[in-house]
Structures are given as structure tokens and as C-alpha cells.
Image (cartoon, rainbow, N blue to C red; front, side, top):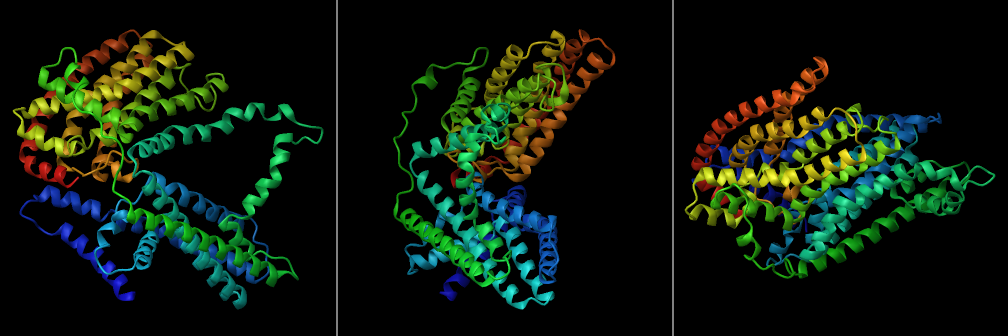
Length: 562
């Protein structure tokens, strides 16, 4: 078994080196792009190193204080909360940032490797999750502090409980990730899960804030709401079964019951870990034996031939329509359309509750004007996964487009128009809803919101095309998370680009409309800035076309690897 695990480690190492080696089919830009993506986990570990050292030091101090019999106070509660947060993030992390290569054990089934060893390698890979790393730093530092304080027996108990807690966190991560991969094997179920993650979970998180005002309507004479009193006992019992609480119970015991309480907590933690790994192993075996994807195939053609964007050439319109259909038919594209609306709904509800000028009013501007500005910018930022990887997301369709008699500028214009419409749909809905729900403010300033967005997009669109050509990444738009995100460098530079492109328009609005007290002149100044942005965009699009032509072969290879 150890030889097989060493072979897995060597295989990962060789995969990393092969991705960095010079290949005749890769140019310098593609090698740099792949190197940045492959080295991202290492760079993330380096970034997390100070946090791990800090957590280990804090846990050691808590253990030293416990060994000396001194009250732990706030520091122990902070450590307890961090471990509880690690349990919560371990559940949510695999759903939001699924490991793309963990389900690739299917290709190893042809080798004489038992499924148990494959699962063990799968579990070792889960130790690299950042939340497990941080929790491991805390549970390692606590026994060291106890031992330094002279409480060796308690340190041994804490070390055993820490190992069980890490095993439990790994079991949670594997159970959730394997169940999620198994769930999304059916395309319809996967799309439903993606929409639930994007729409339902934020709404659930918003409910306590929305229901807060009605909380005391059913209080009894004791001052405690009846509904809370009925559920408090059940909540305490469920909370006591949390792995982090079982871990804490092995350390915080009362005199006379230390051995019995620690033994029961350790047994409970071991039982939870064993149960989770049994569930995870069952899902893993089921995942290995299932087909890659199932679900009905969508009929192609039809509506795409009838749709036409007014004012656009036939080829440009076809490419734009294809980009829009890609957003409408994939979970990542639907998330791009729905997430700004969900964010707008959350802030609109909070703003209405605060009377339009409370703590939740974005930018603290008059009435719904700040909300419209904020939601319009969110609509642009939500476009990043599609706009910053606009060529590679077509997969094999990009190769077909390259073989068709379509000029490069036509392709770039079609992509830009399609992305603009994708951002325009939620932006228009949020802007209109803000105007209807929270009217007020100078109409000229309301006009400045779409004008600023137009100028920002004109400047950012060719830069998005350049970044998509320089940093292509093979993605799966049927997932939400890392597997469907654009390249990290393209995403970061794209975010900075959108912020920088929106800054001049916002500054003009504030200077002319607020500073000079001439709001009627602000739209005129923005129209002039739009013309300047359009001229800059034309120049940048020519540069983007040149870069695309030089990267054409590499882009085709990237789309084939998707």
C-alpha cells in the first residue's frame, strides 16, 4: 500500500513537471499560463503559512494555560469558534470549490489497485484543503502547549482527539465532494444543484435578517420567544454532536468526571469519523462504477437560426447568439445571470427595512440610486468567468469557428456583443426594480448609471478578449466553482480592469453632478467619455485581433483539451 501511495505522489509530481516543460505545441504564454495555474496551490499554501503559524501559536498558548489551571477566557472561545467554522467550511467548501481532479481515480481502475487504496489516496489529497490545513495547525499546537505546561496525559488525549478531528474533517469533505460528483453525473440534477447553490442558499442566509423585526411578536412572559424555547433543546443537542464540540469536550472537563467524559467524547468523535468515512467510501465506490454523465441531449439548431440581433451583421449576430445561449443553458451561465439579481434582492430588502438610508444602503446615496449603481457594477463583475475565458468556454465549437470563414474581428465583435447582452439582462432588471421600489433622486444622475456602465464595458471588452487569448483555461460550465472559473490571472486582471474602467465615469458623475452641482451636465460629460472609450476600444480590439491570430493554434489545442 505504501508503494502505491508513493507512486501517487510521484505521479502528481511528474504531472506538475510535465505541465511546465517546453513542448513544441506550446508557446511561452501558454507555458506561463499553465505554470501559474499549476503552482497556484503551492502559492496558496505559502500565503496560508503565516495564518497556520499564528493559529498554532494561539493553540499552544491555550494549552499552556490549561495545563497551569488558569482560565482560558476569550482565547479558548476564539479557538473553539474557529474549529466550528472549519467544520462548516468543510461542508460548504467542496460545493463551492470542488476539486476537479479528485474524481479522476476512474482512469486508475485498469491498474491492479484495490478500491480501498484508491480511497486512501483520495483522502490524503483532501488533507491539502486549506480549511483542513488551518484546523491541523490548531490541533497540533494545543497538545504541544499542554505538554510544555506539564500535563502530558491531557496532551496525549488532545493529540488523539486532534487526529480524530482531522479524520472527521477529511470524512466530511470526501462525503460531500463524492456525493456532489455523484449527484451531478445527471446533467439535470447538476443544473438544479447549481441553481440551488446560487439562489436558494443566499436567500436562506438572508432570512434571519429579514425576519429579525418580527422576532419578538410571540414572546411570552419570560421574555423568550415560544418558537425559540421549543427548539432550543434540540439545537443544543445537535450542537453538542458537532465534531468541534466533541473535540472541545475531551479537553474541557469538570473535576471527578475527566476520564469518563473524555472517553465518551473520544468515542463519539471516533464514531462520527468512522460513519462519515463509511458514507464517503460508499459514495466513492458508487462514483467509480457510474457512467460519466447522463441526461437527455438537447436538440441543436432551431431557435438559433431564427434569432437575430438588430443592427448586427449576420456573422456577428450568430456568434453573439451562441454566447448568449451558452449562458442560458449552463449552470455557470445561469449563475452569471441570476447572482446579480439575488444580490440586488438581498440589499433591496435590507435597504427597505432601513428606510432607504440605513446601514445596508449601498454607497449611502439617495434612495435607490446607490442600489442601482451597486447592482449594475455587480452585473459587470458577474461576467468575469465568461468574459475572461470567452474563447476556451466554446470547447470544440471554437475549433469549428476557426475552420469557418469568419474574420477575427467578427469573432471578437460577436463575443463582445454577446457578453454585453448577458450583463445587460440582470443589469436592466436590477436598475428597473431599484427605480420602482426606491424612486427619488435627480433623474440626470439616474441616467448616468447606464452611461457609466456602457463606457466601462467599451473599455473592458477588448481587454477581456486579450486576457482570454493569453490565459485560456479548459473549463466545465456545467459546474459552479473552480472547475468553471476563468484562469486565476485572467480573473484577477479582469476584475482590476472592470474597476479601472468604471472609475472615470463614476468620477465624472461625482465631480460634475455632486462637486460642481450641475447634474444636468453629468450625462453630457459621460456621452463625451463614451465616445473616447469607443475610440480606445477600437484600437484595443485591433491589438486583441493580432494577439488572437498569433495564439490561434494554442487556443485550438486548449479547447480540444476541455
